[in-house]
Length: 221
Image (spheres, rainbow, N blue to C red):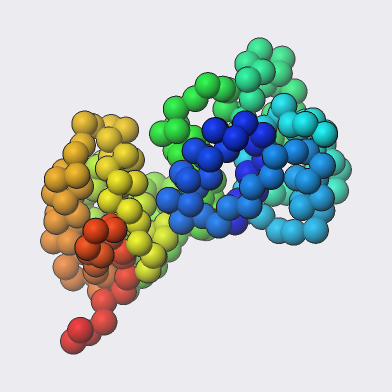
């Protein structure tokens, strides 16, 4: 996805930008509301991550202007304003989700993945593998894939950026949200996925020292 990140806290901004980039998103970063509003008027984004406490122009005003222009770009609000009335106002103004500060980066990643699944459409097909985002299930030649939840997390991470390298550290962090997973556990799940995808026309390539990339198999390669 192409993401606009509007956040003025430089430490948080760097962390969020790195998280988004690690997940393969093209990320444009701004630190004030006026700049965010200007970009939203003239450019297209798949997601806006919007801090409400922006200098220059409050985030809620940026959101109001976006919706008054009838732009339907999904918006994830980040805010230290955690009162019920603040959350209600943000959602009623047109936000699609609201995340209160402080928050864990793992939860932020999970919220972004939700928007990604919506943006991908109902399913994606690579080789003989067809993956359904809503149900988190896959078919290979009409046969249902039997995956554990950790294998599912790893496969979705690769499917969200087909052909691109997904760092091993990113996979470890995502799987680690559910279990205490070290790097060797990532290798275990990748090994299991390779066996289950053997007849799918899809391969998981190891990029030594970097991570893994999922791509359609090249016959004879």
